[in-house]
Image (tube, rainbow over all chains, first blue to last red; front, side, top):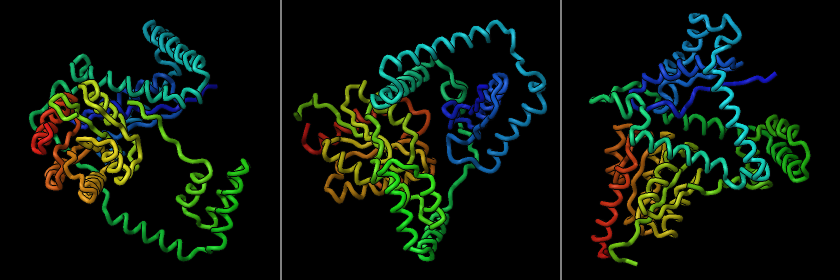
Length: 235
Length: 142
C-alpha cells in the first residue's frame, strides 16, 4: 500500500495579512484529506514571519480537528470518487510526473541529476517564474498583489530570548566538564573507524551518545571522513 | 573598465544556518536579467567567507538574505569585517524576514537598504542602479 504524508505548502504562506494563511492552510489540508493522505502537517499562519507561537501552532492543529470532526469528510474513503475533473487532474499529474522521471532516467539517474544541479535548477526556474507572475499580476495572491491593506495588520510573533543561548551554552559546558573524556575519545575513534571502513556506524553513534559526545563532535568526524556537500552554484 | 557602461557586480549571500534560499536566488536571477554580474555564495556562509568572496570578486555591493532572525548579528559582523579589511566602500544591503523595528537599527549600522516581503525585484534593481553609480562617482571612478 502506498502510504503518504502531506504538508501544507510553506511557499503559499504570506508575510502580508498573515491571518489569511489560516484559510489557505485549511483549504490545502482539506485537499490532502480528500486525496486520502495518511498523515498530515498543517503550517501555522505566522511561519512566514517567525517560528510559530503557541497560539498559531494550536490553530494549525485545530484546523485538522475541524476537518476531521466537523466536515464529515472522513465518513467515506474517497469523497471525490467519480468526479470527472479530479480524475482528469490525477491522470494529468501522473503523466507529467512520468515525464520528469523519464527525463531523470535519460540524465543517468537520480544521483547524476543531483550532481548536475537538475533539481536546484528546476526549483530556481519555477520560483523565478512564480515571482514574475506575481509581479505582473498574472497570478493573484490575496493581500500581496491584490486586496492589500493601507495599514499592515500586525500579529504577535515568537521572539527567541537571547537568554536561551546562554543557558544552552552553560549546559553544554557542564556536560563537557562532567563526562568521561577517555570514553568520549574512544567512542569518536570507533565512529571514525567505522566511517572510514564503510562499516555500520549506528552502534557507534549509540556509544557516542552514551558517552555524552555532542552532536557537533559526531558530525565533525563524519565531515572529516566524507567531506561536506557543496551545492552547485546555479542561479 | 571604469567607464559609464561599467557593469554593476553584486554578491548575494546566505549567512548562517538559514536554508531558505528561494528569495536570494530569485533576487540574484532578477539582478542578472537586469544586466548585472551576480555571484551567489550558496548556503551556510560565515561572515568571513562572505567578505572574503566580496573582496576577491571585487563586487560593488553585497546583498544578505536572512530569514532566521539572526539579521542583527550577521549584518553587524559583515560590516565590521568589511571595515577591518578596508573594504567598507562596498555597499551593504539585504532582505528577508526583518521586523520593522530593526530596520532603523540596521540603517544605523550602515546597511544601505532593507527589502522585506512584497518588494518587487524591480525595486531592488532600481536601488542598485542608483546607489552603486553614486558610489562610483563619489570615488571618482565613473
